[in-house]
Amino acid sequence: MQVQNRITPAVITAATSLLQPYCPELNPNNLILALKAWGEETRVPKPKNPEIEKPLTRFEVANLLGVSLPTINRMMNDGRLQKIKLTPHGAARISPASVRAIISGPQEQSMESAEVY
Image (cartoon, rainbow, N blue to C red; front, side, top):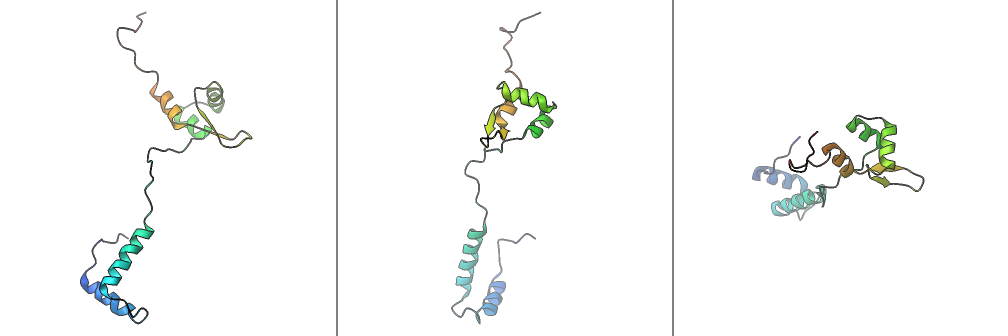
């Protein structure tokens, strides 16, 4: 259910009268301030750096690239895919930037430097 940002004065007055037996110092202005403060506390903070992406598993990368797990292992070992170590025992993930680099392929060559066969 989506709550609207506007509450009518009649609703504020009714809520204030219902809550005053439990909180005698409550008045409509205090209720509005309390509701605004509560809304600020319950908001989920936005990430400071939205470009951060989670590292990918070998299975996720294999599905993205359409290759087998042994191929992913070879690509990690020869450096084509950047490994992010999680534990000293060998658990690792793969950098999303290195996967994007493979998907985008080599940079297009200019017509002057391209070889003609």
